[in-house]
Length: 156
Image 1 (tube, rainbow, N blue to C red):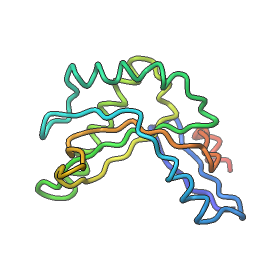
Image 2: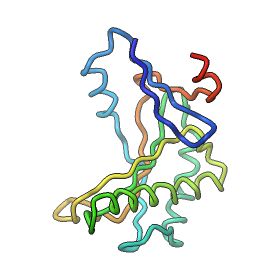
Image 3: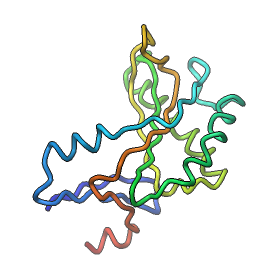
Image 4: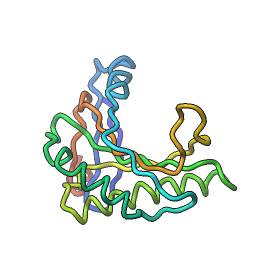
């Protein structure tokens, strides 16, 4: 059995336990279940939420609160265009995801089970969304991902 740890803050770690029968198909199915609940746009170059972004998040709160954490995983994904050094763009993307997470946390959305991600995105062309955004995304919990207290992780 393989175990992959994803760290979120100081209080929780997420364990992804892949049973011996897990396959690439199982993992593909997990990522294929990705559903964007909402997209929050940021002013170009900014990592601060504006009033419109806050209103978008507030509108999503009822749906987020009604999700069963045993069945659904929530991930806040930040995006940024390649600007300057690649690391700067990833940092900006993570700060956008963190801004959304902080706002959700302040509103009592149960964020201790959410994960964050930041990634680079090309400039929005055609049907491509603008890069200055964060998405609140839900995945089906097909791989039985669950939180574990840090002291439980150390004992395992």
